[in-house]
Length: 94
Image (cartoon, rainbow, N blue to C red; front, side, top):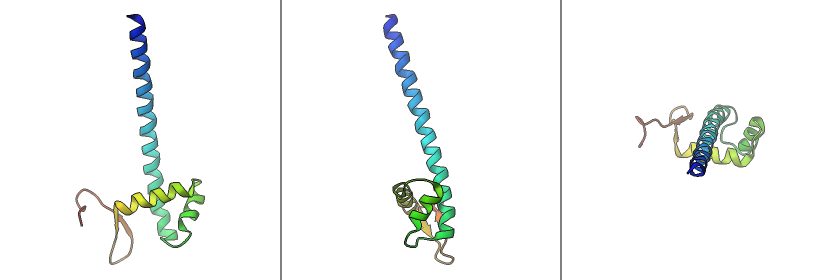
């Protein structure tokens, strides 16, 4: 019985550790995407922008490519000024 409690405790600590690690990864990705949006104001969506942004953020170009895809799905370009605007629950759907 004592061994079962130790195994259960070890499993719970492992699950808690993974949960904490994954929440840190999500937070880090959110902060990086905010910086990508800011750098898009500088570089735009032009050819080579992903590589320049990746270099500036010191991440892989693949990471920035995934961030671009994420942002494209969750944003729209303002028709009057051309800036990227992330959708919020209030303005989603159109």
